[in-house]
Image (cartoon, rainbow, N blue to C red; front, side, top):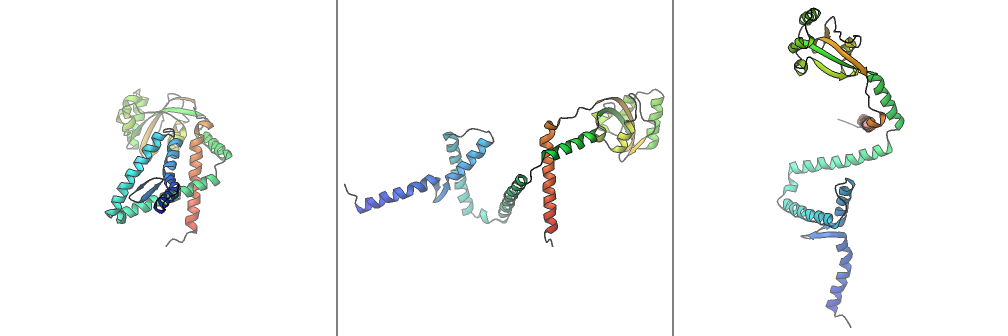
Length: 259
């Protein structure tokens, strides 16, 4: 059996086209959509645990990419690709992608060490202390008002009743209750005033802060319930990574010629 010249040419073209077709999931108006785009999306979906790789998933992605390509071609035809606002958004997205690649590479090459995480955790524990305090407060506008509240407390008035007049509306209706917290959670002038109190005592003089004048009462104390190193390790690691990145950026800004 012999091929006629025309049939032979068609057969040869078909053979040559097979690898090309295998590299693309479709060709839309002459524009190929490479199969590598499907592979990349599938890899991302699987990595995020959304669903496993399957023919149904790939068919859905293929349909979506074809639909997007059609819309993209129409948008280009209508000139949206040349719109100044659109071009700016494209540039912003391009910068974000490139910067993320740089950041990822920097983090991989400059990992946070376990020793640094442990040291940061130890500083956190030392700062937090080994006690938590349950305190209440009444916030007043003036020192005279605060002294008046203290006088009423000494006269037997209930702290919770007087707290209704507090400028701190968030705690006024709750008897001035600030719940359990470590001293480090408050401004130093505030925490210094209550750490020396005994259970049930209140400050004998007004405590001034940028917010006004406080009268503080200590309800109780307990051993601090601090998270373990393993519980907060991800957050500490991320915070230290951000510090490294910030220092890296600041160093480059110093070296840059900024006019």
